[in-house]
Amino acid sequence: MDLAALMQLLRDAQLPDGGWPYLPGQPAAAEVTVLAAAAGAAPSLAALTAASEGWPGLLLPAALRSHQPQREAADALVKGLVAKILSAESQVVEDEDGVLGHDATLRAWSWMPGTAPWVEPTAYALLSLAACGQAEHPRAIEGRKMLLNRQCSDGGWNYGNPRVLDTDLESELGVTAWAVMALPPSDAVSRGLERVQRVREEESTTSLALTVLALTAHDVPTGDLPDRLLARLTRGGASTRLDRLALGLCALHAAADALHPFVLERR
Image (cartoon, rainbow, N blue to C red; front, side):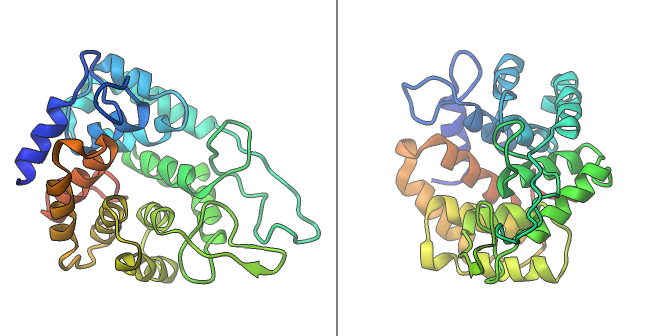
């Protein structure tokens, strides 16, 4: 099964309402619809509008950046989402005793409005702001500072804290991949890229896809990782969970020097 056949699998799984579920027979899910849009499928405007609610809306403008017809159809929706991203407030905490292990006064983005910021939603928001020409907005600059402040001692990122009570926490590959995609080149990003290249220690469809996306975002050779990802998607075929299929297709397109939706600079 080649890339075109996998893309057809994704298109064939589209629901009558224009969205995508995690698995056939389920209702549309916002995360899957956003990733399908990023992969080059064509959700309906109604499905995109439904997918813009909650945290998937943080990533939706980035997901549409490489697909001009979709972007034009959803232009008003994207403009509204960018305004919402820029105005979103996260919880700010004064940590006089240094218990948290990071600067909790930096504003970024959270899974739920008004709660503590986390690495992944911040990365999503930064990618979307960059896709819409807002990379140098003060909120984006502060968001990048937050990510750098949350880097773990092993070079990667975990979901939130790099350390607690003077104890270093281990990073997570997937979170690290999103963080390095949302940051410009630096020594910190180089350390993050070294972390994701340990993907064979925890290989899965999702980890391979995110590693390929992170490496290609910074023009780092991917070796045999795209082939390994394609093999996994081919073996899974129609039984592959659709969010993983869509994310895998994003990675394979990027590896083929085609479209890369999750990158600071348009390729």
